[in-house]
Length: 141
Ligand code: RTP
Ligand code: MG
Image (cartoon, rainbow, N blue to C red):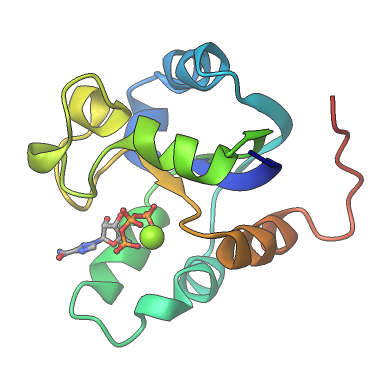
């Protein structure tokens, strides 16, 4: 399988719970490397742009409100099949449906406050990495 990069976000609920390190440990234990990272308090404009694909969905305003409710930790993960691997580690969007042992099963409270974001395909991963790390050198290792 190819080495990929994917965009991951530890959302405001998980940052507030002080579990960034526990979540990072799961990435590393699964063989994913953190090759870029920054903590950001998103503006409504940035959150809306980032989740623009959902702008006509009924939950869009709640999503933007939640994503701007506190700082988030944003990282690029690199590794074999990183996009699917990260989605597997995250678990289903709704923590009630997330498989035991996944990040959302263990750390998420609700479908809104669901601890993490992960790119869902190679195309979105490329766009999302460029959105948060524009023109930056990211070092493979
Ligand atoms: P994410 O983009 O954050 O990684 O989450 P995802 O792929 O698992 O889910 P997605 O369909 O992309 O939805 C983005 C975020 O919107 C919220 N959502 N609420 N109330 C609802 O039915 C609903 N559906 C989605 C979730 O917080 C989800 O993470
Ligand atoms: Mg998504």
